[in-house]
Amino acid sequence: MSGTDRYVSPLSERYASKEMQYIFSPDMKFRTWRKLWIALAETEKELGLSITDEQIEELKANAENINYDVAKEREKVCRHDVMSHVYAYGVQCPKAKGIIHLGATSCYVGDNTDIIVMNEALKLVKKKLVNVIAELAKFADTYKDQPTLAFTHFQPAQPTTVGKRATLWMQEFLMDLEDLEYVQSTLKLLGSKGTTGTQASFLELFDGDQETIDKIDPMIAEKMGFKNCYPVSGQTYSRKVDTRVLNVLAGIAASATKFSNDIRLLQHLKEVEEPFEKGQIGSSAMAYKRNPMRSERIASLSRYVITDALNPAITSSVQWFERTLDDSANKRLSIPEGFLAIDGILDLCMNVVDGLVVYPKVILKHMMAELPFMATENIMMDAVKAGGDRQELHERIRELSMIAGKHVKEEGRDNDLLDLIAADEMFHLTKEELEKTMDPSKYTGRASVQVDAFLKNVVNPVLEANKEALGMTAEINV
Image (cartoon, rainbow, N blue to C red):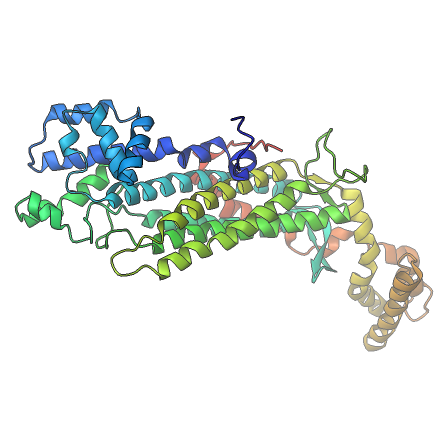
């Protein structure tokens, strides 16, 4: 077969990094299974079962080289993935085959591995999320003083700065980081609790010694790099855990969508543009086009992740008693693909922010077209100082604003409000005096100060705490 005659997930072909793909690879999964079997055997030996150092060493010697061919052939016979790998491991470890998986159920390797894999995936997501925040911080600092029209309801509103707008994107990603760190800090292993969570098999193995059995889960957790295990369970860890994890991913996806949609709108205005490579084609028909392809892809993949979070939520709600198996096929799809998609999204975010192009002259042009309307309060105060009546001036400036607005909307003319005011004897202001009020920086309030404070007090401490993760760059495939 050529490899082009069957479906291949675009998440692995086009979007997700090699690092994230490895975390959800068969090698990662089955090597973790074997590490868990070693941890179980070591724990049982240390607690007094008749397991030898030679058996443990044999298990360790074959922990990495998975004999997939043997496992696949065995699964055709036994129709059980865990037992086929127990058998395959035993083929490589003839001295230890009798103690592999001793006292455990399938979920011992399956569920503990799922937690370990999600934990590793969250580490990578966190690293990329921190780098997105770091790139946005640089952007915000660079453009903190660049006035730009703000928008409410996508209608021109009181000016802000380009850097201040970037802090809005950053703040949402920081909230996602907080959620991620909290959920990750609560992850625990299932441990080894048996077929219904009662540890009945260990009562048999250890002759009813309760104190010894209490040591099993903590010892396994420590060997696998976790602080503890869930104190109670059925056969599986609560599927509520998967819900919490994918809700974190959905939150990141929502923030990424907000960011990417703003970039798409700004690119339409020609104020800000995502990276566009020299040979890149925007449209097959319209050669001049520069489509925001990366931002559109962020929005597209994010929509998938947001809806994907429904899968574990529904799954956790319909688990019967100590366990059912209607979770398994869904978990195999929803969790890996949610992580693969968010990985691609964060790479795109890093790529876009790193290469954002700002066009100050276009921004200024748009600003100056609207600024006379926004400067009316200042103009009115100047006219009062020149001897005018505040109430009469307010009404007159409202009337002139309506006339100028009509000129712009109905006749396609430039905004001539300043000319109208200068020509009106009520204001006693010349065109030159009015134009002095047209400095955009006078209307951005505390935007620049807010950026400095936000970076200093909120962002920089987070970046300092995660400085070992900084310095990533992202290449996108297509």
